[in-house]
Amino acid sequence: MPLTPLDIHNKEFSKGFRGYDEDEVNEFLDQVIKDYEIIIREKKELEERLNDLNERVGHFNTIEETLNKSIVVAQEAGEEVKRNAQKEAKLIIREAEKNADRIVNESLSKARKIALDIEDLKKQSKVFRNRFKMLIEAQLDMLQNDDWDHLMEYELDTTELKSTKEEESRV
Image 1 (cartoon, rainbow, N blue to C red):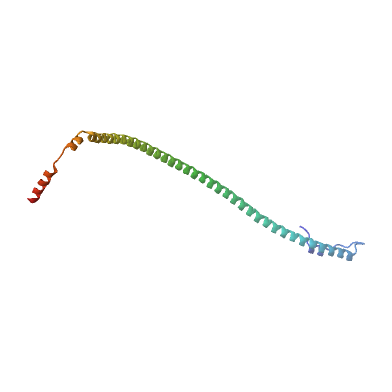
Image 2 (cartoon, rainbow, N blue to C red):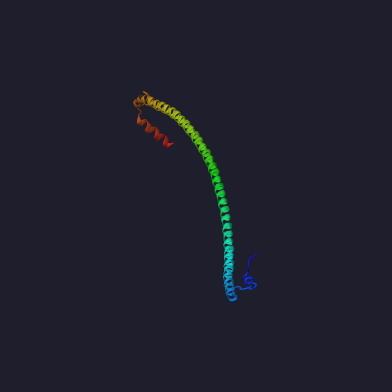
């Protein structure tokens, strides 16, 4: 057990023949007591400071652990978000590809239908053209017929017509 300043103060030495000067010894002991008290006080202050520093280090270690855990959680969350984003991107791409295929197929189907409609319209226009041509040719044949010339040669006496008309109006 270490000495205390009180132990030093209460220490009594036995007196021997031609012993040390008692005043010098007491002065020296007083000086030792003061220095020892100073050292003990400094030791206590250093121990308190060490305890404070250890508490702060413990606090900072706790903060460091919390930050490390937070970083790990944030990294895991980031990875999860990244994985989810990649999954969603793949789903969007698949959906877009399906829609693109559907649109392309619908467009091809419409193009085929339009091509068939065009072919049908071409056939109808040929038929119409032939019929119209035949109609015009028939009309031209009628105009070129000699019957028209005979009609022009036919003469009618207009006086007879007038008298017939007057008789009808009297009745």
